[in-house]
Amino acid sequence: MRCAIATLFVCIFLAGCAEETRDAVVEVEYHANTVAQGMQRRIDLLGAGVRLRPEHAVEKVWRNIMGYRFVARAPEGESGVAGLRSRREGVLVKEKARGITQGSLGLFKVEEGYWIVDIYSSVDTYLKSAVAPRDMADWRLLHHLRLTRPLSETADRFLLEPREQVYWRTLLPVVRRNKGYGFLYQKEKKSDSDTTRVMGERYKVEELGDYVLVGKAQPGARFWHVFTGGEVYLRSIVSFGPGELAAVAALQQLDLKLEHSD
Image 1 (spheres, rainbow, N blue to C red):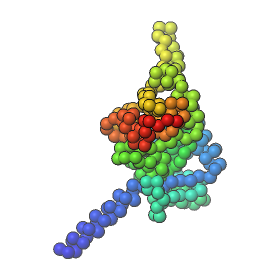
Image 2: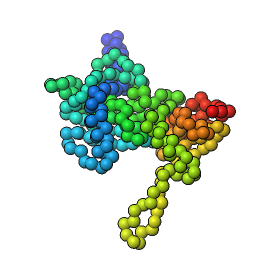
Image 3: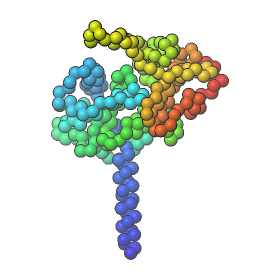
Image 4: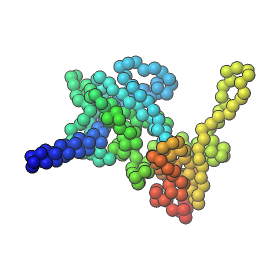
């Protein structure tokens, strides 16, 4: 009986360790020339609608509510790798890199059940790459790589990278002037009978005290970028799961007081 109980505890312990280990990622660091010539070129080609050759092994591409682009790959031989570091919740952990092994000629192979995910900003600046389980949610991946930082059980803080901030310096006045709409464009007519349509991306805009908040929501996710009344960028918040994230609640979670004056 005691042996059976001991065996049960050992099984539970091992299962817990396996689950904990799986809830981590291996950050992949590349040589500078690989980032400049490989990562950036790949996203430029994808953005232009170019179909990549099979050896690039791009299996899935998607964007999240923040506009981040995720490019998932499972190459048979990954080159240009400078180092591998295991991370959990943004912290380096001393454990064996899982999901990727080094083969001959210095090439790395992704194991079954994993893939390499390259992450780009909303303006397609390369940020980071990681080996992750295929079923890992993208917001968990961002946590592990410290691209977002948890504020609560449902909300994370993040910062726009420099190129994004430059982009929003131009976009924010347009959004405020157009009452929520970004840059407008006219949809091309396919025939003379088509009606002219002016289109543009729509944002929520809230002005509270000395702050201007611009955001967007979709089922299961929402975000706010926070600026001063003078349109200086401060910080951003994203929330996943059911429910809403009101502008006032966003300021509170970001520790921004309404009486703040820039």
